[in-house]
Length: 159
Figure: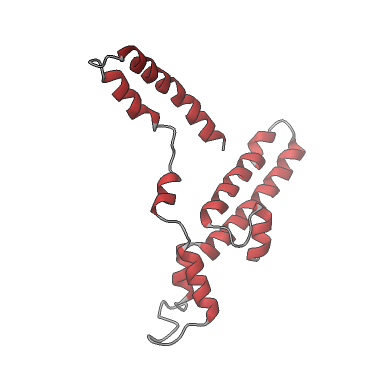
């Protein structure tokens, strides 16, 4: 399976990042997992075939876009460098190396982490501020933040 066909199978563009491909893969695995069709054997067989195609497509994308692709592209089968130091790399190799680096910065990596727990430190601060004149409001806010946390966890799990 080539990269374009693999991207079409997952529903992502060929310029998609590895994170986008992984997100699409997980969503499709949830949708087409054979255990969801345990009561219907024909649907279960179809889901199994579909899941195999999805997994193969994801592996093609990971191999093409993953960090190992950059190393594999400039080394031969024996592990020796394919190009001499100082030699100009072909344009395809440079594009493959740049694609493997990705375009996510440190903030992108930080915000890709689960965010459901963020209200908890604020809730603790609100609940511990007993000397404030607005203690009742802070206490209510802390309780509300703790109550909202499971909802945020659930919403994050759905996406």
